[in-house]
Each structure stands twice: as C-alpha cells, then as structure tokens.
Length: 306
Image (cartoon, rainbow, N blue to C red; front, top):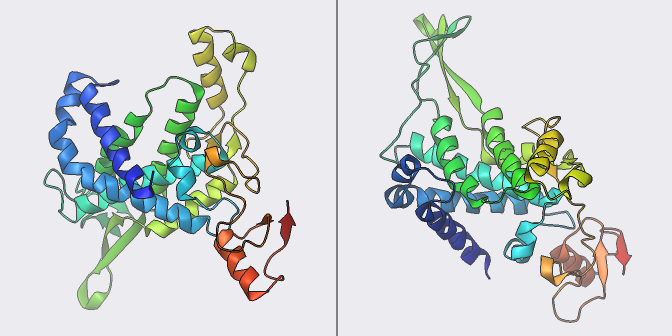
C-alpha cells in the first residue's frame, strides 16, 4: 500500500467509524456525520499528511527515518514503540493545526477567529484583541476525527489516545502572543495582543524532544493477565496516574532497526543496484549510505556490518 493510499484510507476509515456510530451518541453523530465529514475531510487529510512529512524531517538522520513502508503496514501502525508514539502525536497535531489555521483563514464556514477574550485585560499595559487562532475548534474536531480510530479498550489504545492528546497539547504549548502597539507616535501606551499558531516546524521540534524523553509505561502484568476487565482498567489507570499529559509514552521496546523485518517495513539492506553489503549506519538512513558508498567516503559515519 502506498503512502498516499494510506492517507486516503485514514480519512475513509474515520468516515465509516462515524457512520457506524462506534462510541458515538446520536447528538455526536448528527454533529459529525456525512455533512461534517465533507466539510472537514480535506483539512484532516492535509493535516495528517503534514504530520507525516514533519516526521520524515525530524527523523531524516536517524536509523528509523519514518519510512513509508513502516507507516503503511498494519503491524507497523499497531505497535506501541517510542517511534509510533511520535507518529500518533505529530499526526494529531497536524490535523489540529490545519483545522485551526483553515478556520482562522475563513476557509471553513462553521468557524472563525477566537474573539472570546477580546476586550479583557491580559496583563499590565495590554488587552486581548485581534484575531486569535481558534485552537479550541481545531482541538475539538481533531479529537472527534483522530481519536475515533481507537475503538479498543486495551493499554495500546489508551497509549495511542494519550499520545494523540500530547500532540494536540503541543500545538497549544507552542502558540505565540503577538501584540500591536497603540498610542500617540507609536508610544505603545497600550498593546492589543492575540494568540497565533507557531510554525509547524517548531511543533515538530517540540515533539521530537518529547520523543527523546518518552517514558516507557510499566503495567502490572499480573493484573493484566487476570482476565478481569475491571482489574485491567485499574492497572491501566494506575500506570497512567504518574504520567503528565504532555509527555509521550510507549509500551514496547523498539526493534533493532539495523535488522531486516519486512512485517514492520524494515529493510536493513539498502535497495539499490549493486548493494554495498549488509551495512547499517548508526545515524544515517539508506539514501545517505548510498551517497557515502558511491563517493567512497567512509568517514561520513560509523557503520556496523551485520
């Protein structure tokens, strides 16, 4: 399955999740049914795509470089590793970001700027005003679409939902306060300020740091194996109790990305004519290995021969 086919299937699956009413009330269905799908699906698709492109940028020099083959395999997407925690977070952030931006630009009929604070004192010498980006709208619609993909009740679903929320919180945490001066001769006697989305690259940088600091969730395996749903839910709740919502979490250790694993989309041996051998660079991805190999530059990185 190609990368772009995956993105369209992503939106298509959301559509059917909504139509089939999984975990949805009647009111939610009326608010987010086919009409809403047609309204927001374009933004959802673009947002998910921008998230994956940012993933590719952030991991371009890592052994795992957000490969399309890994993202388009069922098993690869279902794993709960440190890397997939980032994929969930940046995808949710991308959808929220695009919806928020399109809302503020007036591209969506159902929303506009956030004027809820306008006229209120924000601090010494400044008032809220202008056109704040409507992140509350973007967050609400993003949550309705993206979180609908998680229909399970197990620890993996809980982790994915947590990382989705961490991605959305990253959008909020990186927002900028923009101000305009007022007064005679630009004396800036008072300022009018509003909140604006940061550049999406800044959100990607923020989440990459969270990825590097991600925490492994330690579950009470005895309670999880008991076969009692109440015990399982309790074990999940206890494990999450000490985790801040802004942090990324994972359940499974990452595989060795220097070893071939077709089911996860991992091709340790670079696929190009006349391969240089089963070599895995500590940081460089395959395209850099190919470049270094053809150039005869063995000093570009330290290889491990498998």
